[in-house]
Amino acid sequence: MLVFIQKNYEEISKAAARVVSETLYEKPTSVLGMATGGTPLGLYKELIRLHKEGLDFSKVTTFNLDEYIGLPPSHPQSYHYFMYENLFKHINLDERYIHIPSGMVDMNDLDKIHQYCEWYEQQITAAGGIDLQILGIGANGHIGFNEPGSSLGSRTRIKTLTLSTKQDNARFFENEITKIPKYAITMGIGTILDSKKILLLASGKNKAKAIKDTVEGPITAQVPASIVQMHRKAILIVDEDAASLLDNEYEEIVTNLE
Ligand code: F6R
Image 1 (cartoon, helix red, strand yellow):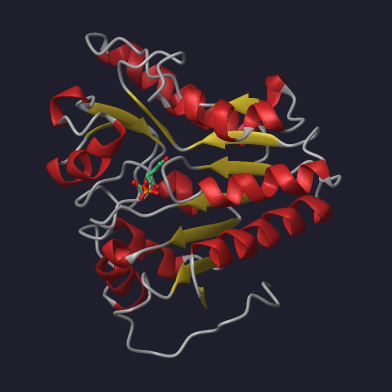
Image 2 (image 1 turned 90 degrees about the horizontal axis):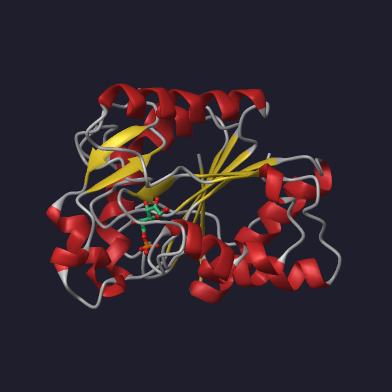
């Protein structure tokens, strides 16, 4: 696991965009794992800028981490909507290669849900696996919607959102917790760990405890992100605020990512 500390949000976004663009230059047919939320917005803006300068996404395949259950793709808070608004409609991805888990699975039909989750996993495998998985981190240490206590070997499935996640995400739902869906479909921790490279980003003081636990704490299902310590190619790029509780010394400049 490599940890890089950058000055601020703008710097982590630029450094992350370098990691993504290097991956695409090396392998134009890369499979990218995508995250939503506030953290990757700067990265996505930077990728749009790089695309205008020639970065090609036409052979790239994407798989999103998660989606709220019950929100159709047209809902402004759905992760489908988020991805199109903030990245996909601005770059030259081939629509056929975009995958976002459906939030419209029927919660009364457990067999169908199970089949759908297995199908999503199979699509990832059929695409050759994820080359680079982009991750944010919840203030409670979650990755995707794998909340504390999630099995470290878990695969794509439905999870119930914790109160702390709902509190964090209320800002996207007019600050009304009751408007936030109860469930989400999410890649599992095992699915994420199968990615060939992981790029975890964090910004802000509210992520400092989660980053401390992830980087310097024990590996535990109570802090799902801590499992990245086990990954052979995990890159963490965090700003000074998110790094403020770390005790050890880390890199300042993103170089030599291998
Ligand atoms: C989003 C996701 C979540 C977020 C995390 C941090 O697809 O999987 O794990 O990365 O909740 O969210 P922000 O970036 O909004 O602080």
